[in-house]
Image (cartoon, rainbow, N blue to C red; front, top):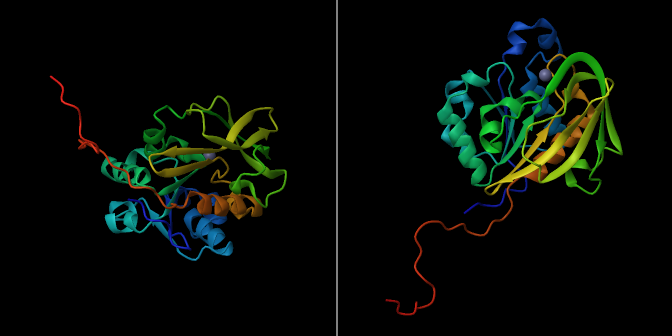
Length: 249
Ligand code: ZN
């Protein structure tokens, strides 16, 4: 049975943490790693229980103990999706089914975890040409959209365009427009098992996107939205009848 999250959801920010080591531009933008900037953004929004984990730690920093103590997991990956061990992927997926929230950021659309949970290719169109991105709120009453106004604007970002090969989202919170004319479903919610998932598009590593106030607001909102809530027990397997069954021959 899923336990409701404590008043402060316990957050783990997971980051592949490779670009910072081989691209000076990324290292300059994120001197302590993108995970540190994401964690700082969450703390600035009053989330006090935030830890980080990275790919090159033992078990990618996602030991059974860490996963058991995580209410909401953020995931950023890009160039090293294939380096993520399949047994860790399965443990993360199982935790989502059991109620852990998952926030999938930007190029993590191609992460093993997201593709496994979606069941589709999760492919999309892209272009690195510093387009302006405008993310329109298309579900104004959704908790993830609170405090950001009618739209968010990011001066320079990578373009992601439709078609985005995902199952139809349960809810669509943001739709992006780019200078080049493309559109993209950039804020999507899904439920898998007892877990809530939010995919949020912005966050290419060569732009300071995770310093953007509106982006930080959305990610903090998403953590609170995705935190586990009280759940009725889930029973599976062979089951005795609750009432006597009539005799049948
Ligand atoms: Zn990117």
